[in-house]
Image (cartoon, rainbow, N blue to C red; front, side):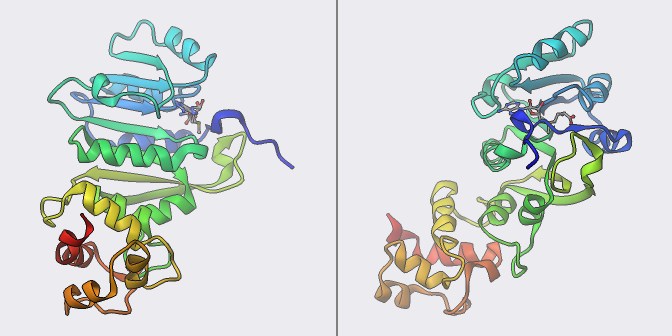
Length: 266
Ligand code: SAM
């Protein structure tokens, strides 16, 4: 069996891809950009030449100081040796500004990083993210309701951002090659909570309850979460099919249902 590289270290060696990733951020001359996991600097090198300011977060105790030395003469570049999941993004971003995020993500913590980005996006800290992840995860994040891959991750992502699937790379674009294909997504943060008239925390919980078990109908998942049958019967909107699964409903419909049931959940 192949040994998994430590810290998800599959370094990008495809020159065109690293340029395409930075290009997808758009004009960053006046922007602060946070890079997650700069590694050996494949993407960092291009960012450093283009970004107004670059803050790169690297956990590896050897790679972080090597990068700091390499970019020491570039005053717009800051390398921080830190676990991205423990980093306080509010402390890194100047008050009142938004930042962009980029990264060829370490796959072993992709979901946790995405959740962190969604909550920073909901808090108004982020503008855009261009991130590479395992293809299967990218397909789930970008799936539309009614298709096989649509689920809680898609709904959560799409409540917080417009998601564009940009391109896919084969294992040979990396060294060492991972066992999976990788895809790049662009996420433009535009939280939809106010537009859909739902409170973020309550609606996040409602989505988790609604998608709890894929085999079950939405109504059965809600019953399992503690909603009573008579309440559900009395308050279920006519516009939502009673046998529907959460996977088939748009966010507009989920929000309509949540608004009808909202006072029951507290
Ligand atoms: N950006 C480089 C590239 O494209 O070649 C490296 C990408 S590699 C897939 C992921 C990088 O994330 C590695 O450099 C790894 O050390 C770093 N990393 C892993 N876990 C991390 C964490 N919790 N916080 C910050 N960086 C992490």
